Image (cartoon, rainbow, N blue to C red):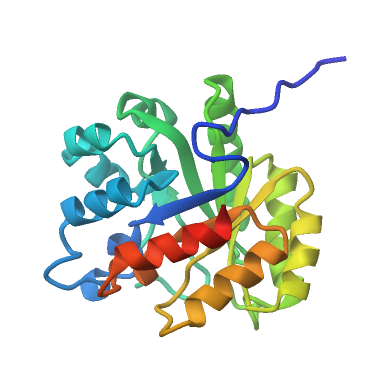
Length: 253
């Protein structure tokens, strides 16, 4: 019997918990998410460094062009290996734009990959993920799956059923961590976390939330058994990102 050695997540977690700063929105959503300050990747790197994040998520281009500053920050680099624009139709596909070997050369401590379950192209993305998971695990690199229900057959992408489906897909495909959307109901999320089994669950930060809403959102997801957050806009669009990060970390850790 072949005994598979589990991937060590200690390079991108702290005591089994994590907060990641996501900045792959430029290609995924377009520059409309940015202002004159947060459009600069150096500002994002500074937030990640001062906030002592467990990882910072970049696409290949930023990871290459800002590599000296990323490595100097000592924040673990997570490279997204695929991407798409928001200009696609109702059945999206996200193709690879970076390889595992390229990510390793850039100093990545983990790699990420998006699959849209429910899209008519999901089998194509499954195939790419399988190869990436094989290559990354052969090098001891953790794999994070961004798993989002999206397609003509998906009516509510954050329903209890869809959250659990996304989480279970992460487990079944061999991801070490699965990133899913959260509908704000801890009871629903508990079922998704249970469905993920030994695949850890992190929650997408989602759209910008006002006031205390994001704090309550974070409390709910942690009470349901998620290991943490992969947050972008709610932090780097904030007027006081460092204060918010401190509050979030107090909840997560």
